Image (cartoon, rainbow, N blue to C red):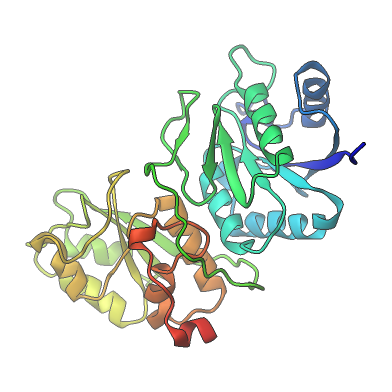
Length: 336
């Protein structure tokens, strides 16, 4: 008889274990008891030996930071030899951010890591917690490779998921049908995540250069500019090009993505995007906001110089870029 597959649940907090309190719903339910009850009552895969752990402090996922990402990563590495797979129970608000961050840091990790959560807590009417937990457990026990996210009967790549609903059970999607099978260039022994000041600025009709300067003063470590369409912005707005260019020239990378879920950034396609190309902004290709944010935090934590951020951002590290938009690392950067 083959040995039992050992799967560990890691509870970080979030809706799945929330209970009512005078302040509103907050983490605090007995997740371990819920998991044990599910395993005994549901049709779970046979031959499993389950473990359970939780972060030092469980939190609403709205309070997750890169420090928590690193705690998850450190835990997975420390327990790698003891388990065949892991299920990370996480709140939905930043679930996709955390999955992408862990995937970028664990490109050589040879155990399945499946993130999941729920829209409604365990034990409440209409809860989706049981189905998501069983699905994630089945995926982890089945040996699915890499970091993934399971939600509402769908298994998504950890670097390609984005949250689309806080109401519907189908809370996450991959906006792109294709999966990235381009060559990957992860870092074998990455430095730990540290918090970096990555500002997210959303363009809207009427935004001025003065407002952009105010929103990026003092200068952040990087800026994600959520533009329109394929990367267009208000090119006729006086001094906006100069404001963005000044920021880039001073060493702050400006990464342009779209407010659209399904697009690919091309800063040379439209005249209304070329001003961003001229001032040195970097297109985010087809990465989600969650992936771009996690990737910038990761690259900054590695001490990547500002003039190399674009090369690494355009390099497929953990499946976050589709094949036809992924660039290969230059020989110099690959060797570094």
